[in-house]
Length: 315
Ligand code: 13P
Ligand code: SF4
Image (cartoon, rainbow, N blue to C red):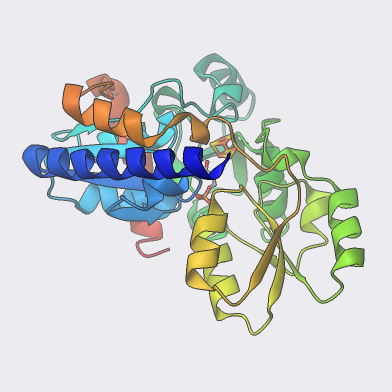
């Protein structure tokens, strides 16, 4: 983009920001955003977090309206935990392909094949799948959640990579669904090895949605909040980052004196990037798209989410 185009974009964003703040006040709304959102959205958000922090915040808020900037299952979780609130999202096409890799019929079949197993669902699942599960978890509390389950046999959905990662820390038998994140799963051993040769002093930090062979090369493995905290508190100055590019905004804000090398150009979740500032303004102006979850599904899914919040109240 040339200088003039950049200036115009900055001016347009400033106008949108102003309008958004005005609407937020009028609607008594809170803006929640995931760390993978565009910087322009993170700049205006009241709270930026990982999946766990966002679920917690959605439950606590006393705003009337939640504008949820993330992907669809996150907005659904906010609505399930807070059914009396209006939850709107910038664009209903912002889904999560990994969440779509498991459905109710398939899960019911697996449950019938393993009648003694309890289902642990990564929060990256739709509301109707959550309704079929015993407890939810996120990447920040998965180990703790699995140990809390009163069964030696666990059906794990939908992320095979996170499932493999947590299976190393438990004696329980894990029956793992074959889902994966299109974005994190693209990161290869070669990407890490090549960067490590170019930056021998850099520390390798990855999200557990990456493949096991990539996770095996990491110095630190954690959720987005975990990654941010690790980099902020580390004495090291150079990091090879194996998670979505949106975290760059907060990493650089937290630690302007450190260097963050993103491990692959493919670490961009196109679904998270569907949202932008203009759509946030339109959503609050029109109060749509609104998240709706049928009551029976929401009640069953809530039990699974609430169990997670009880087991890991402050992940
Ligand atoms: P966390 O924010 O919980 O680390 O999860 C990452 C993710 O892929 C969300 O879709
Ligand atoms: Fe889903 Fe992966 Fe995008 Fe997260 S990064 S929303 S898991 S596709």
